[in-house]
Length: 126
Image (cartoon, rainbow, N blue to C red; front, side, top):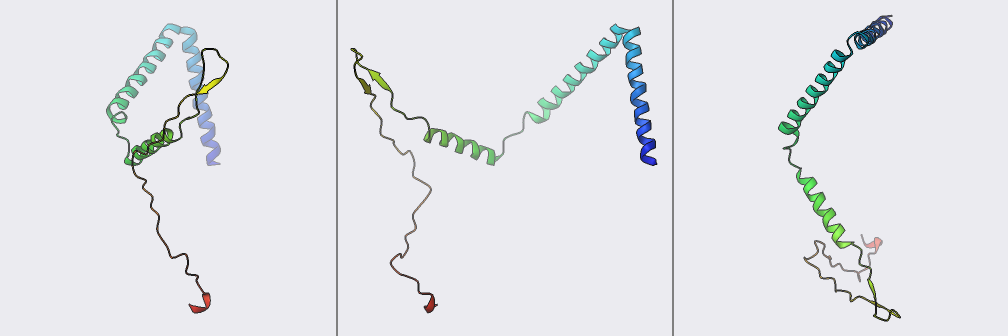
């Protein structure tokens, strides 16, 4: 019963607001649009102040910096390395452009752990 009274009250408020907007639009259209533009302008200014004071100066986290570096390395590693074909002056036979040898810029962060692979485990000896 309580919920029904609240929903009726909310519908009444919305209905009165709609009637007020329509009546102001019909009787004083220029004042209505002036008020709407002032409210929109105030909202934009308020958002701009909040954005430039608080949101803009946030630094990216260390994880995001590492992620961007990894994406950059991945793009450099997997970029398109297909050979470019050039035609000779007669245009009879295409010649492949010379390919460059891939040079590793830094050592890999992975290492091989040597194990004793010849020794076979016998479960009965455990």
